[in-house]
Amino acid sequence: MNGNENESNAINRLEYESAIWSQGLTAIAGVDEVGRGCLFGDVVAAAVILPVGLVLEEVNDSKQLSEKKRDRLYEQIIEEAVTWSVARIEASVIDSINIRQASRLAMKQAVQGLDVVPEHLLVDAETVDLAIEQTAIIKGDSLSQSIAAASIVAKVTRDRLCTEVWEQIYPGYGIAGHKGYATKVHRAALLELGPTPLHRRSFLNNLFTEQQQLF
Image 1 (spheres, rainbow, N blue to C red):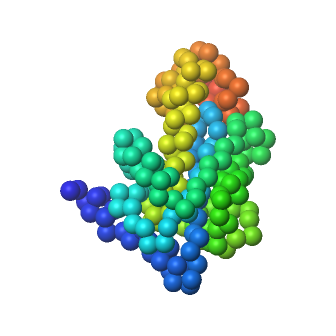
Image 2: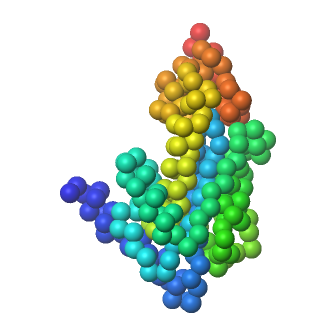
């Protein structure tokens, strides 16, 4: 076991939840989003309410987990959750209101999609525009089980859109591989094929400006 794993296992990911449960509140929703830094596709947010006292030992920031482990935990989370919800904001809206506001809107819609009204939100480094008590936690997807669960649900949802839907609609861009991020393969495909309707135009200006300066 390496140092990172030791450090990861030492974290009490129910610290925030336990403090809220001790106040008699039971409906705590973890909220997170993925795809904020992508050039392509929707930003996806998830909200998850887990049962009081449930411990999911392997749950962590989705970026720290293998795809196989994320997929397995995704199935466990949606099976164990009291309620869960996912929301997506498309590229054209991201371009019109900016990525931060689009991410916050996706989070808001994810919370509104829950079958139970949360009594408290635990949010990864953001605020959700709802009149619900909430705590923004820096690196929350590593520190809170509820937020980590939401990050996994959002990540698996978006990755499956990339591999099962968007790759088929727009072949040639390598979406299944890079998931819409600005990799060398993605940038080369953009310059060769041009942007699709799902590319975020507001993210591409700098990309093409940089490329033009090379010639």
